Length: 193
Image 1: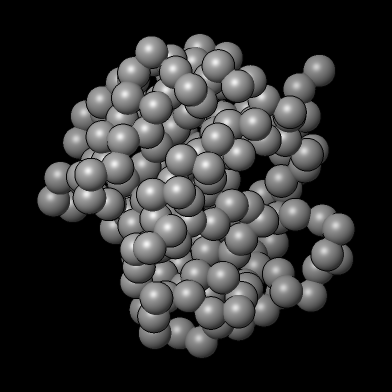
Image 2: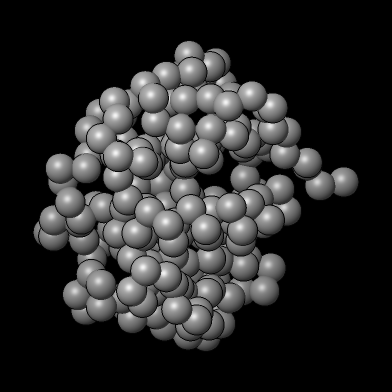
């Protein structure tokens, strides 16, 4: 039976979140707490590793950096202090090109690119709540990876909203002009699972 994500009923802030036990993983979206249990599957983790290898090698001598969960991304509504921020997420992978957004706690502000790898317990949240959130806060690209289907949907910002997704299968290659001349080889990625 798939895990059903528990939600805490109250509204919370990053100040509350930082006091919770370190062995629990939560996200806050507009003050609503979402449980991040259970641990991701082996295939999920394998995909994260492959993305890190391909992005990391390319970004080695460039200003952009890639980070994998758990990595807090605080998304303030304005200039509020950290403790009153009501949205903090841990995307599977983020690429941040503005070093001023990085601190010891993670990232404050919208990363340039976010990748979420779907799992039974996160699919609905990744396709709905997080999609809406990432669109609202100005993420430039949002990638949704379907491990079972071996596909990737790439949403790119067109003005204030994401455009229609580009679809890639396990034989494809994703060009990432946002980061220069990077190409992500999906055949290599999915063949390693």
